[in-house]
Length: 158
Ligand SMILES: Nc1c(C(=O)O)ncn1[C@@H]1O[C@H](COP(=O)(O)O)[C@@H](O)[C@H]1O
Image 1 (tube, rainbow, N blue to C red):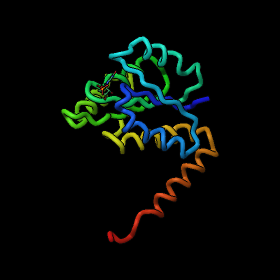
Image 2 (tube, rainbow, N blue to C red):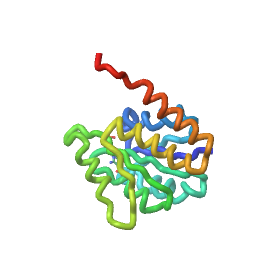
Image 3 (cartoon, rainbow, N blue to C red):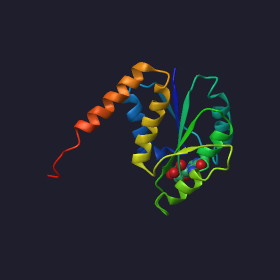
């Protein structure tokens, strides 16, 4: 059963959001990936967000670009933690996505990550960290990931 639901506003977001899926796969965290849009498929979003907790999901990662209302609207319909990834847009380089996601009204939180690939990677890691608070084996895998990352940073620039 999937623990993390990765949703995105369009198939065009996959190039970014695949990094979230990749991190979760490497950490052996069961997850699912769906295209769901607040704007284009509002009923699909309603059905997804309202059923998410019952289906056993623990965290939702929502990526969207431009007028990125998807993470906030998902958060409005579930008590699960929602992590928002601002996808880089062509016109405004993702500043529009970032500002659409980050400035939520008090009472409906979205944990907002950085624009683009780094945000997508960190959303996967953060989702895993949340799950690891109740999963010792996953916590060990996350610690190993960090250790490997530390070891792989070169001491010399060239
Ligand atoms: N921001 C949203 C939402 C939403 O927030 O519901 N639905 C689609 N989109 C975004 O529109 C951009 C362009 O989509 P297309 O490439 O399909 O034209 C995508 O980055 C998507 O996340």
